[in-house]
Structure formats: C-alpha cells, structure tokens
Amino acid sequence: MPPQDSRITCRIDVLLSERGMTLTELADRIGLSVINLSILKNNRAKAIRFTTLTALCDALACSPGDLFALREE
Image (cartoon, rainbow, N blue to C red; front, side, top):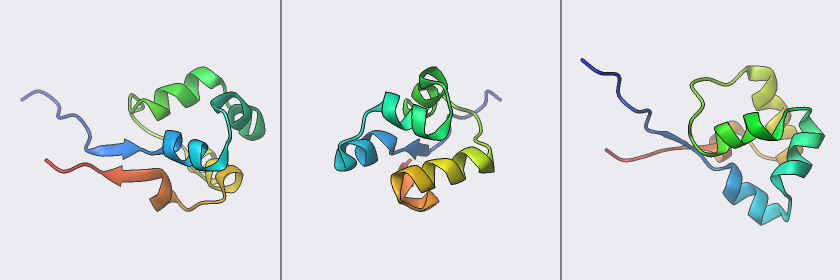
C-alpha cells in the first residue's frame, strides 16, 4: 500500500501575509534557511522539530494550531 499524503497543511504563507513579513525575514529571525522554510511552507516537509515549531510560534506570535490546518479528505 503506497504511503498517503499528509492531510496536515502549513499556513505560514497566511500568517506571513497577515504580519507583513517575508519568508526571508522569518528565516533570519528563527535561524532557519529559506529553503527549509519553503519546504515547510509548501507542504513538502515530513516532520518538524519542536524547537523549530517553538521558534516559528515566537516569531509569528501564534500557536501551533495557527500554523497548521487539517485538510478535508
């Protein structure tokens, strides 16, 4: 049986837009490469470290539930 795509979607683009922040600025603030943030933003990441999640929440003044949504089947 082939692996299913995750139904979890990342909402970084929405939060960045609401805060008037660029992906590059966010990457600089949390110490992550733009490439790795882009992978997360475009829903291609397989996992996220709690330290990265915490840094994202701090930089975007949000909670983990604001960063991710569950896509309907």
